[in-house]
Length: 561
Image (tube, rainbow, N blue to C red; front, side, top):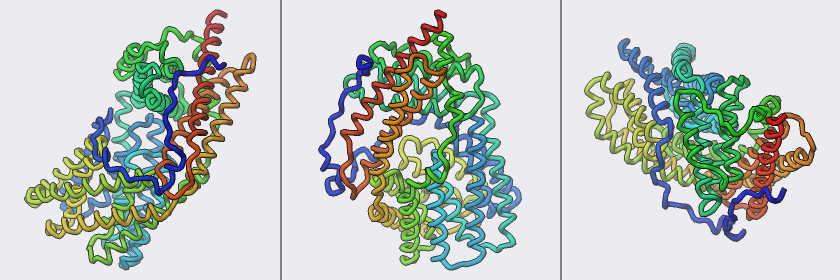
């Protein structure tokens, strides 16, 4: 088995002591660097325009643009779940719409019962914490809890009566139903589009790693390729139906896994050629070197039979992040009130938008948020005279900014914020025209207050459980590896068992790296066991390589039988 060791180089690690809080510096270099646009950047951008435009234009025609806040609550749900297969997307979007309506219902009810700003800020902070925890636990993906917190926090400060709440919720539900239709519509043309994209990404990532032949920056590329393959399996296993195209995609993901374990024996151009074909609309290519027995290796039924962890168990490790969110949002809102700013929910939402997996990433997001908002305020100063020409121009500008925000935010958060900020300011003018100078002053003040107070809360609320989560992740890798080794030692393991064990081990290794990276950015904790993490990763890679080679032998045996 030792001969199956993949060529993954050792990475130089810093001494343990450097991982304590007093040795860490907050990064500035690279925080504002632009990345490559996402593969499907245009899909959420077009979807949000298609979802927002009909309700807003209808309200414009009826002369009731003051109700746009409630329809936008449902319309903005179209931003979610674009990377999920359509069967899984249908469920995810439905839950997002229900979650959005739930937060809106609480906010509107609170607004109808009290006008006490301190109480409303407290409710908004608690809602933001719940939304953050649920979005992280369910891994709903971008834009996460931020849009939910924006809608619910803004709704808290809209004058309301209890009798109006059902009608306003009905508007949100109708727009949410339309957003669900918009999100599902592409499935009529390309029903396996998300799975194909995920598979193509895995093939390209494996090809990129194979080009290094395990040298240079091969370790980082190996982890990226493993994460891409794991993401492809998650996409393929997220629904129970296994059609012929999906079975073909599964075979390609197996080839990507083989490339990761044996990069020197892989033809990168062949993987890239398959990726190009998969991205198209033609038939899914079928590798001719796996044999028909490869289908037996895809123990999908075995894996689908394993239920996911209960939601309450996934919420447990997120308690520190939820506490940070609640405390930071509340304090930001209170500070805004103390300064006399008229819209404390902007400070609240700014704080809510900061919280990432650890303090270091939270700092980076804070810098991006402040830079993007300040430039966005200047952009608003340019657009405000145009918006005041007519309500029709106001609606069209908001649609354009919606598109721009989603088109740019994938490159860096601050770039998308340049469009989000003027859009948020213009939305306040749906009900009535306001003074641009007052709006700009309030926005700048709330941005700075929210960022400073929110980050202070992140530092104050330590996440000491991050280290314990590494221990749990190490144990999970060891258990998965022992199961795979046991099956490797068996003369003839049950069909699908080895493949299921291999994917479980692959997922455990990816989760270990994600957990270690999150913990590495936390302050005020003991030194991290990076040597153990590295050894666990290496032993996991060796076992994964052995399972692939064992499966290759079984494929040949099956083909010869």
